[in-house]
Length: 460
Ligand SMILES: [Zn+2]
Image (cartoon, rainbow, N blue to C red; front, top):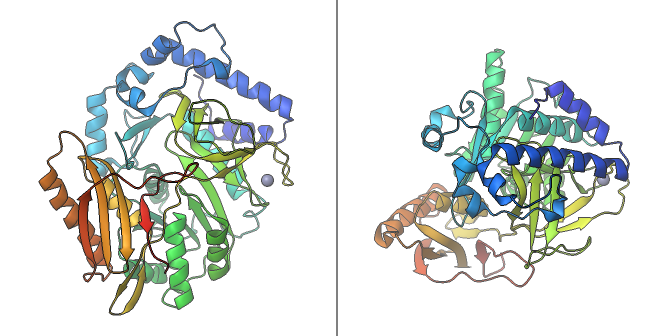
């Protein structure tokens, strides 16, 4: 597929933002036709999958695909004939290569979920340039953020709280920006905090660094907002940008209030890229000129606008090397098609993804609040589990419900888990909290809600 330069990408992104509904629909169909025809020519997987379809099929006629079937056939899925899975595995294993390009041309990101196989995703320069343009034009240049002086300045001090230890998309992006700035001789403007760090360490590093922009998961930023209120954290950021988790209104208002600055929100995913961005009227608009999102029910049938879905089918029109076409993701969303006062022609969504409880413990010095992500990320590093869930019955204990994969060695998995979770607790001054593991089914959620991975059974 044709390459798109960063300048061309910005132009395309700006053009779509003033299109009528009909023009936008036409543009989506053109881009879909191009992607589908490219995938049929260059991906063995899609050629087989679409074998019986006419030349320019409609979106709804394309069979949905799942992560399981695609990841099982990586070499057939990828459209670059030079691709080798062995080489990719070597590349991912070498954490020193973070931010480098695989095969000299693809950026790589991986996800570690709470269930199943990790997804490894190659993104070509087209994807990278278009998604960069979406961020530049619809986030940084949005009415909410463009007033803020220095936000796009290369010398702005950026702090990011991220999951480290793998080629996660956000970490790769952080590292790429840092390397690019270093090439220009700009150093010490990018601070990386790991979600696994004790909160007290994060607080003192942020106090020293005094960031102008902070990015991270809403649940972590909420914990930091509490630290700011208590006076241990003392920073004055110009803007805070949340990503990757659901940002509820109460969390957004709390963060805005404690730091006295605007809070932006981006919903991005490894498969879809920058899926949606918060407008100045508080709505998450889909970037539907490049990413198609179809809400579906549990049987895979489309649900109408305004109704909560059980899952969504995502089509990423930007990435040709590893095509994502009607790819099923278990996010519950509500799609809204009515116009928004901000004037963008794109529909907006409420994302009701995961809404875990916030861990809260007590030690002799008082209450310690942490983000659930800290525990989830630690557990995701352990192989051999098929599913897990944390349940906290009281402020001084934590239980993990687990189910093992067939081939897993339970005794060593339990040892490894205990070690890693006890380290998280100890790092946060919680040696007094007892940790236990039980082999049990997770507690399921009520209908329409996603299963929680962290459940707290008491009010605190
Ligand atoms: Zn809007």
